[in-house]
Image (cartoon, rainbow, N blue to C red; front, side, top):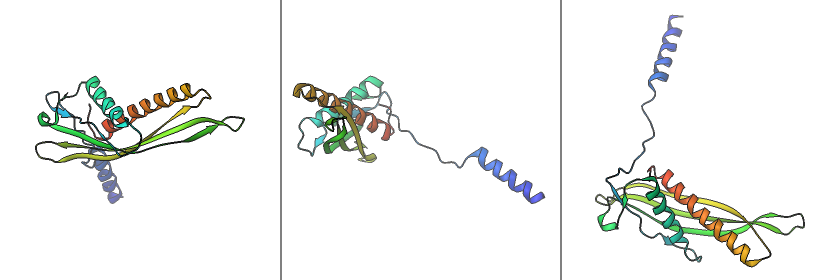
Length: 167
């Protein structure tokens, strides 16, 4: 009985004190600077790199992290490449005609300290977005463009969250 109480006390102590591990969040302080150069584009789809880069800079400016500056003057640098972009059918209507398309983009990004060259975070992220089709080509292209912008926004937010920085 005495041993059982001892074990319960040890378990309670371990639960109350925790294991000592925790998530580390690297915050970009307001006096730190960051460079976000134009991402590379390894796909045949034009302008994806500018879409993702613009959304990252917008996200960074909107949430009030450090200042975005040129790479030569930055404390940190966030770089990346668009690895893949694909479009596929996602849904059909009752007449068995295509009703919804899905675009998917894969991005590789990394955050590093400029002075030391230490990589703080590196990851490959993928996101998708559906959009409705239309027999009117202009409406279909507008819907695809809106889906691509939303996809870039999602990826920028994913990069911000996964890198552990509050841009």
